Image (cartoon, rainbow, N blue to C red; front, side, top):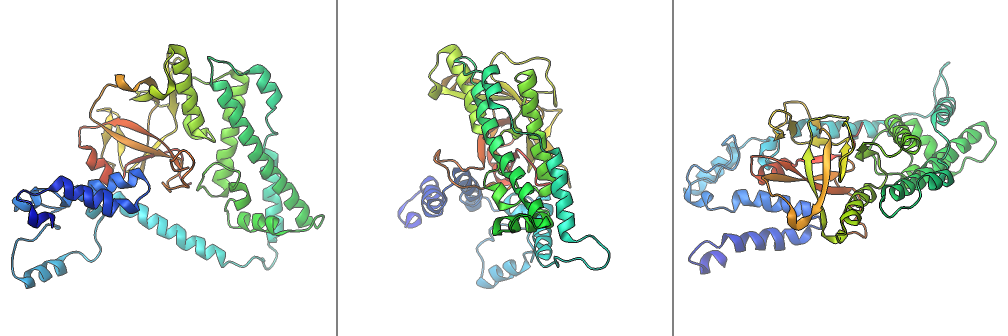
Amino acid sequence: MFLNEYEDLPLAALSYLTGECNYGGRVTDDKDRRLLMSLLSIFYCEDIIYDDNYKLSPSGIYYAPPESPYQNYCDYIRSLPLNPSPEVFGLHENADITKDNKETHQLFDNILLTLPRQSGGGGKSSGEVIEELAEDILSKLPSNFDLELVMKKYPVLYNESMNTVLRQELIRFNRLTSVVRSALQNLRKAIKGLVVMNAELEEVFNSMLVGKVPASWMAKSYPSLKPMGSYITDLLQRLKVFEDWIRHGAPQEFWISGFYFTQSFLTGVSQNFARKYHIPIDLVGFEFEVMEEERYMPCKPEDGAYVYGLFIEGARWDRETMEIGESLPKILFDTLPIIWLKPNRMDSFTEIPSYRCPVYKTSARRGVLSTTGHSTNFVLLIKLPTEKPESHWINRGVACLCQLDD
């Protein structure tokens, strides 16, 4: 109807109708809809009609065939590769490695489920193995944080919201460590026959046997896709960071990946700025500056906060040009240097060519829609400078992650 009734090609109307209404109406995540519109723009453009040499992908294999007999179209379709490369979706070649890795992990996860639980011969029984593992974890797990001491040392102050953030984080981590400690203590007793091995303890036992984090722990935990060993190491590292914060005061650079609820930290940074300059917090947003320093800064910033610990997937940070560039072959992730979160009035932002890069807690890039309207896995959008059009990085699926899967 659009093509027949209009003299000119109504590309804007067609794109909106298809991308936002027809397909986009089934998409709840705004980042997914952004990707959908970006992919659609490759096909819904004037070049595909007026430029005979217009290609749909860099290799030139995919294009819209010129008008010709029906058989020519069939022959062209049959000539296309049986296994398409990632360029079909605008992805980097490394995407093939990521796909193969995930398929391999799924295969091994399923194999692990079929392994026998009993050991033969003179080896240790599964019960002995798990008891030793539980004992090892319990010996490394520190005691709960003393909240009363923290409240005295870091009281609620109008001009320092970080004290409130610290307290909220410690409450959440205390809840998690209590669950882990209780489960491991009861599991050791159950293996010895001192208490009944109920369904919850059996689930913890079976999960530990195959190196997975038990579901009862994840119910009280921050999002994580790490296996058991890496998860415990990560948890202990987070607890140490907060222990250092309690002893020595707020750090000069914050490990953004170490927060249980990252949004509370971001709100705290905004709140400090808003209260200092008497600006309504609704008008405050973040500008971002990627520093040259990788890990340590000489002093705290006047406003905002320095953060580190982000990984970038689908691209890399070019330390010479100080902007995002193409991934190197076979290198799936790159670490970002320290980023300065600079709060400012949103009407005072300096506009530069940049890519609005989403930050996720895990590589799953999905979560449950929370009351804020955002996915529980989504943290925020950060602007990274680039010379290429934003659609290039959108099609690449470039995102920052707070933690890797291993």
